[in-house]
Length: 89
Image (tube, rainbow, N blue to C red):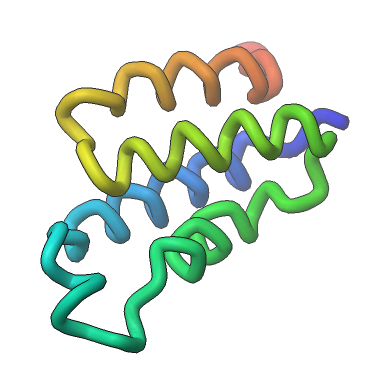
């Protein structure tokens, strides 16, 4: 199932926001924090995707949240591959 580009853009925006507020000690210092909650928040715009693609995105988003510098290119490449082709810009 192909989703509109705007939904992938929202996924990237949410992932960027989650990564800005993530730090390794948060799981120890804040008992309410859960990486799973951040993942669900980030993936909400694309939840209608096929489960195989969604699981691949979930793993990539988790890596970006915890180490953005090392994994952001991987996520961008994945999103480019899953997003629809631009129409006549």
